[in-house]
Image: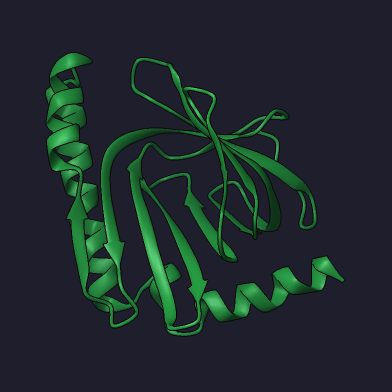
Length: 176
């Protein structure tokens, strides 16, 4: 796997289990990249949905991807605090084209007070049937939801108190 370098601008592509492209984030600035972790930042980036519709993100965000965990985390910086949107999905891969992962529908929304809600369970169950997720995959995803919720409770990784602020400061240096 090739590794981008800090300052590179990359595209992020999410797919569904059946291989269909789901969503594309046009430009994210790489802040840190190793074989296992990629941290990026973006602000007002164009997002293209699978049906061709586009929209622009509203606030600065720090993105955390891991090559061993089945989730990624987006910390959105808003006036009233940091909100996190966590996608349950495959570990990321990176090639010259983009950072890529498979989105498995389940999401966890985390509020500034660190309360959190599991979202899209109905959509997950529907796609699990339609796309024939293997039993082992279902168990991997459920185990990773538990790991993600434990990280939130323990303020681990991207949920650590200073994580988003520190990486956002680094992101700002690339905008100058």
